Length: 424
Image 1 (spheres, rainbow, N blue to C red):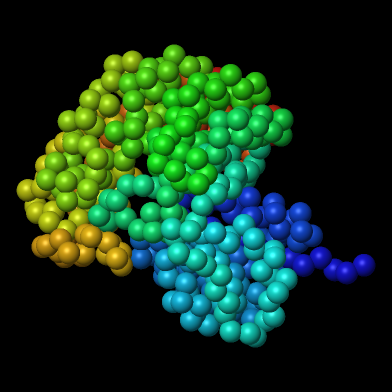
Image 2 (cartoon, rainbow, N blue to C red):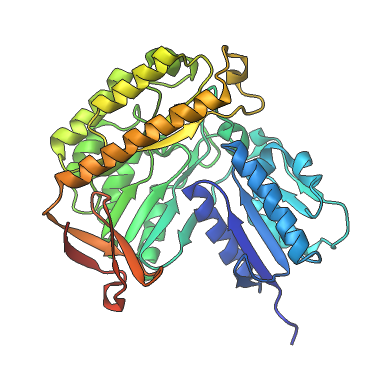
């Protein structure tokens, strides 16, 4: 009997990428491949790339060099956003054998069958306008929680962002298919589903990316709330202009949708929001946060913010700092602006020096730490349900409360994938 070929995966970037890597992994296992850890020897290495920051590009190159040193005869496949945006650049990296664009990432086994090590790198890609269709994906690291992809692509044109160029038009799964996937995950013992997408609130556009939303995100959350077997849902990230009052009110009255929102802000200055081509003003953002905290005082609200965007003066950064300081939010994800090819932001002046960008990042990360500490202190002494995860690290296990407070405790097997009442 022929020995099984082995494959190992590494994922860079967002939760959506992790869900897609999991789906590709399952497809390859169905084709007879045996999955290995990335640090182990394997016949094929697959790197699913991101292109939101320069670091992801650099990390991809470093990973390929590492594979070359350890296992020079192995096949190296690069897919994901970086592969769609710069396929020729990636194909020129020594050691890369196959570059798969957005339309081909789920056909990896077919392409590998036609490949021989030593040939020049093969590029399988197409113009992003031709990328249609929707591939259901979910990640299962352990049974506790899974990232379920329900939407892909984006029709927005934010001036700093390459994602529409890398993922194509906004398109979605159907509610019917999402419910089938949720029931299957529930039958596998999954307790928590995190809904993911590129522009999640835009859910409902057909798989061909047509402009009309046949269904919407509010209808999706209402339908998922009825699925038996799943005890928790989280909404991974949703644009403030698409987070409607109806969605917020529904979550407030749901036992399954957790009181936890992650809402990208990017800047607290209306002038910068306009330069970024965002579709809201800071007043709308503040209103969303206020409604959440009015209906759910215990809710956790996370914020994405970019520092060092072109045109961000000291005064405009201070405006962002003071605006976020005034909001009743729980934590920040702070991104330092990095120049991306073919984006409108490259033409905006003045450019903020990199050391200034880094100082502003540090300043907002300090604010995030203080916000997080304050939020946790508000809940000290309360008893909340924690869903503990299955992996042990240094003898410890972790879990999250409904409102996203992380809890760490010595590992206990009987608590894995169980909701435990926990006094904070």
